Length: 63
Image 1 (tube, rainbow, N blue to C red):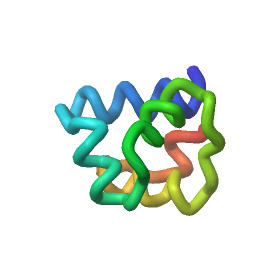
Image 2: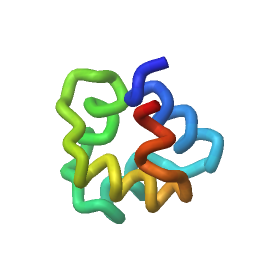
Image 3: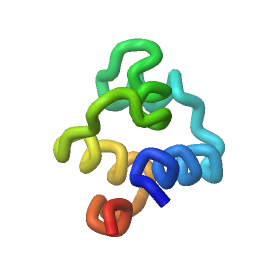
C-alpha cells in the first residue's frame, strides 16, 4: 500500500476532514487531496506533521 493511501485511510479512520488537516499543518485548500491522490509530492517534514497529527510514527507510515 502506498504512503498516500495509508495516510488517507488513517485520516478517515480518525474521522478527520481534509479541511481540518490542511488548517492544522498549514496546507492550501486541496493540497491534502492531491497528496492523498499521489499527484503532489510529500516531503519528510509534512509527513512528520501529518504523522504527529494522526498519532502515528512517520516511520510506520513509510514502512
